[in-house]
Length: 472
Image (cartoon, rainbow, N blue to C red; front, top):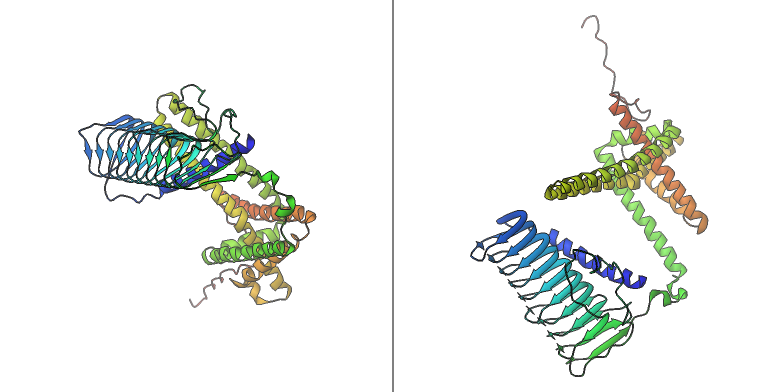
């Protein structure tokens, strides 16, 4: 059952990400109309000439939208006409009207009882196409269960745990119900809330595995993957029936997964080359935009190694604590706003808090993974040039261009042995990150205290002004 959860959750995540990515990728319309509120209704005699964007707890379309309809809410009902694309995300999405192009829907209970002129892409717990429905293109669905009693002109591609085909499919039917046993009960809480929880919309009961009803008609081939071969009614499939037995990953022999020594060496080399190119690009960007700051951080690590290490640990703990406080504060504030019937504002607070947390996390991870390594690499390059008494130690580019390859070589060497390398490489990476974070922390404290850091020994000081002469 754990295998079932993992496999179908993966399908749902993939489908959800694709749906979200396409939602975010919708090009901005030259003209559009927006509606929001607790209950939004487009009456039957109302015509929206442009694209329509809606955010509501309950939304009902009885009229006509000439462009695309993008809607998010709790209960979404489409009884009217959308001449463009439909994008809908909600707990319940019901399409009883007409969609003139593609429909992309996601939610817990999805029902299509009307017409979709082109493709239907869906992700959720349950999808039902009623007998009066017609999909003019392909059907792509990832979720727990699907009950198809309507018509699909093109092909269907479904991944789930329970799929029943009782309508007409014009093309091929591709179904993956692997990882479930026929007769098995639905796992509690899988993968969203179970239907037995209160306030959840009703969904049809679909037996686990693949079921092809006697009334079904598949014009192309039936390709399905399952734990056991299913009984397919005679004459239901016009093409071939292709069954693939699901083999759990645990059954694959260990020997088949062990890569060859040449593959191991190749992957190790590519990894080091990728790290070298990445650090050179980041280093070049830093030495181009903030060369003096980067050299100052390097000099701080050289002159204050132990304070840098200690303050780096403090910086790491402070960041984790700040992120925890931020998340808790955002959640508590959103709950308070919801309790005082300001749920819409609470949702925006959650969105803003998520954006801030994401930006902070991205900045910290980039600093940890790249900036700290450039600081230490620059220090390596400076020390090497000074060892040979070369004036290149004060150059803008040469210390970084030398230090980065040296850093990559050192980290590559300590990553060769299998067991010791794992611990040693992780320890070296932690020390490097803490030293760089500590230098940044020390610089930040000095800025907040209103005094500049001591001038770096390797950063050229500006020439002193000559004292005025008596004649001057």
